[in-house]
Image 1 (tube, rainbow, N blue to C red):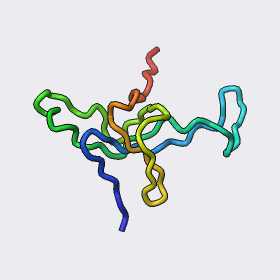
Image 2 (image 1 turned 180 degrees about the vertical axis):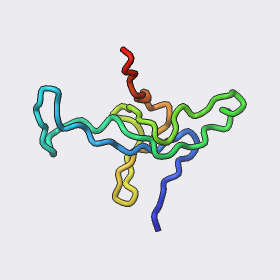
Image 3 (image 1 turned 90 degrees about the horizontal axis):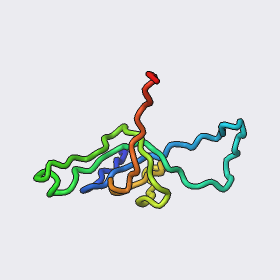
Length: 104
């Protein structure tokens, strides 16, 4: 039976995205080199928020499918069915990556 991690309160579950191995200079970084941990990922699940949020009109600022940026120190990494996932509070997220407008 496949398991799914359901976050509680104001926590979210983020799947890390593999960092690009090709640098702008054209240099390919081989796997296994000392690199900082991934700092961007895709939101898989979102908790319901905190009890007082509804009275204050506050909603979760991210949804499943959002691409987010987070600091290396955010949350806790867990492994569920051989998949590495980040569980963190929504306030630890630095921002959401939106597609750039091509109008410029």
